[in-house]
Image (cartoon, rainbow, N blue to C red; front, side, top):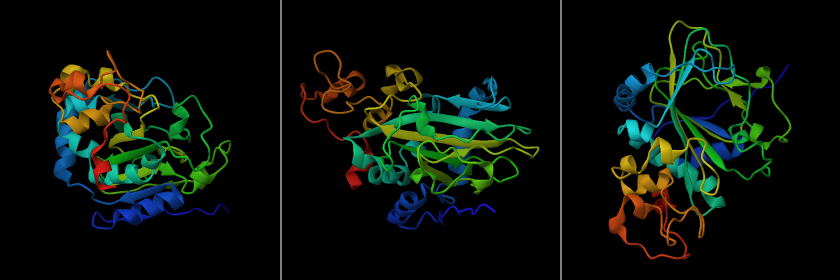
Length: 291
């Protein structure tokens, strides 16, 4: 019999250090009801027209009964509160934030799994970087899934293998080793890019909706091209720190400048008039203030 670990669960009032410790130990944690149902409903209401227009996936991995709708920053002002949520940024600060000058948004999307969708192949999100074998313990990505509905094993809860972030990179994991990340609406599943996981089978008659917002180190390419998903015309309407978090910032001393060594934030907030050159960049994520 395979011994299964459980996913540690927390309340929004629990110390963030406890959540970070769980992620360090297990690679994953759930914070229940981290935001109100009204917050979730506001995002989904703004995204509904785009979700309705999104076709389902073309292969088994993306899901032939699953819709994936991105560009949240440009399409949903309500999503900004999730992208900059102190819990998510606090976890990033204390995990991947220790490994680079800054981090950035990696992907923003609604994942809407329809009835009858089979379980997704188990995988690690960090495989997105061409399966590069990052050193064990060197985390480059934090993923979050905010529950848009009550997520249950029956309707396709994400299946996770706690502790798999410590596995040899070649070890794939088996369905029998997974546990379902069940959680009520407004909760958030937080896990590292090295954790083995996959969407569960939706055996219900309802759609399973989650809001997926991930973060990665600023010297890595983003899965969702934010400069197209949230182009300059849209980024100009973002608060400065959110625009930086989206990628309108230098990723390190000499990464991502434009023109005459100008900081990318000046392209959308030209009134800043930052010093040019290769001086250390300013903090690009609001969570860094609290570190």
